[in-house]
Amino acid sequence: MHHLSLYFHFVKLRIRSQMEYRLSFVFELFAQASISVIDFFMIALLFNRFKQLAGWSLWEVGFLYGMIGICFAIAEMFGRGFDVFQRSILRGDFDTILIRPLGTFYQVFSHEFLLRRLGRIAQALVVLLIANAQLAVSWSFTKVGYLLISLIGGTCFFVGLFVIGATSCFWTVQSIEIINIFTNGGVFMGSYPFSIYRWWFRHFFTFIVPLACVNYFPSLFLLGKIESLDASPIGVILSPFAGFLFLGITMLFWRWGVLRYQSTGH
Image (tube, rainbow, N blue to C red; front, side):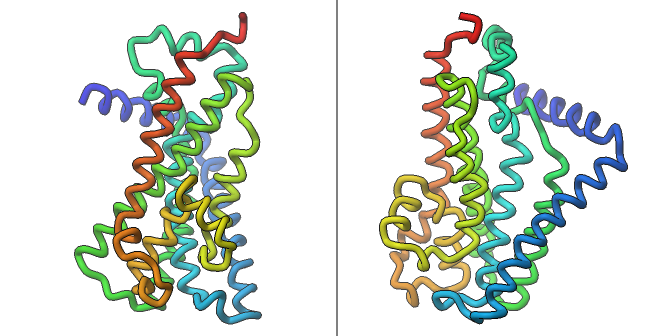
């Protein structure tokens, strides 16, 4: 509880600093939402020409887009400290983190909080709600709970990717650019049904890097498409928990990297 109250205190300070220039904050909020609108507009243009994509309609893909967009935006909002961790390595700030009486993971996680990501969250949520209205999904208490777990699990997955990128800084000083393939590139890939990709691609992003578990498999359950795509019902139901497992593994990787850290001054 002490750590939780301390974290919220840090978040309060971050929000206060970001609201120092309110007009600038509003512009940034609007810019975040606008960029995301353009992304979905490109998807809509594709469907204006082809109508369906591997048996998925525009609003079914919109459902995928909304889910993964929310997960990534929330992960960026809360996990930004890992995304910019290379600055702490380059400036030698991590040495200070090591001597504080708090866990390193906790300190880096609470280092940044991007409130302006609310714009991207709002845009993705609007697309998800419109898609839901167009599809007339039959909701139940089970499905609502499953959706919430899926969104939390997807957020954990993207935070895990940020952690991998941050941990790589212990050896490379700067975060490896390949991580962007799985973060920003992952959002783009996950905005489309995984059935359009080759089998090796689907297997890699299911069992190695569980991107498909963020929104594709959960959407099969929520939209009632499990049987039509011949997917494993048990695997689909358990898929949201892959994000929690992935984050747990990356946290162990972080701990291993911290134990092998040498100051940039050495």
